[in-house]
Image (cartoon, rainbow, N blue to C red; front, side):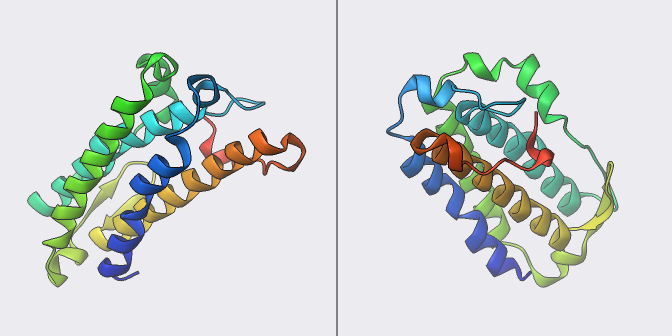
Length: 169
């Protein structure tokens, strides 16, 4: 994936979240689907924290250090410890959007050589900046799919797509 393709892909999610979730009731945002999955509110809180403490931090380490250790984050543990289900939607979305915009600004300054800088991502192995971008875009895609599944279940519970197991908290 080219960095310009990644920038385009990563620029979509903030607007999608605002347009698809902004008019929902608090009860709809907090509704947890069957099984042990994130509610829509928890999705946004997760995306916010992973953006800041995951991708922002990893990108900075890759660009500022030689072969850094990149931490993994336990999304389920963060959700419980930070009580995502008790947080407010609007500030969580605003924080995610601001963090994503800051990351997009930083990504726009990347030089071709920056894409090959690498480090060791816990539980994954060696990753370059280019690979981090691929993982980032894939993460957005997984969460977009789960969000659309949850929205579909509001319209018709019988036709909701089961979220992938990788997105279980």
